[in-house]
Length: 165
Image (cartoon, rainbow, N blue to C red; front, side):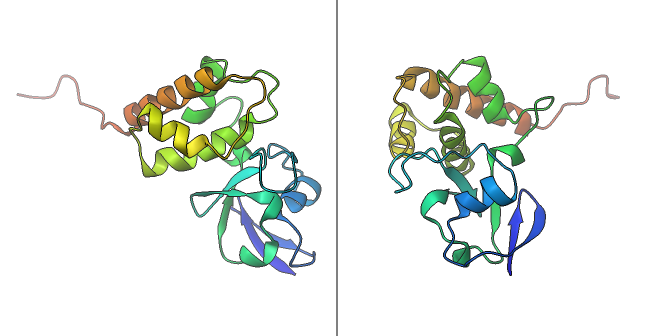
């Protein structure tokens, strides 16, 4: 048995320690945002976060994850309350076929947590491991910038109006 913490919940997984995380997420835990693309860690459609870092779940064995926090797209927000990165990708209509988008969002989320005000060049460099065959790269770039602004405005302290003078 392997103890796995995914999206804040503890799971006991009865699987070979060499089993790729992607298979457990999709087959055991029924979390289907991360996609099987190439199975070789070359396309990025399986990207999730482990301890805040983007990782390719198709080539990450369970044995490396004991005691670590795994976050999938499902763990960021909901349909009714999307996370800033999800909201930004929807507002910019950054998905065409949608296959790569979960991985793109997870890599962008990990990147924005480390660098909340990236340049175009920094975003391109960070997202380089993830492939989009539909060509929505410019919309994805705009979505990451929008997410950065949304995250920044969410972090601003609220001001008290009508305070005593």
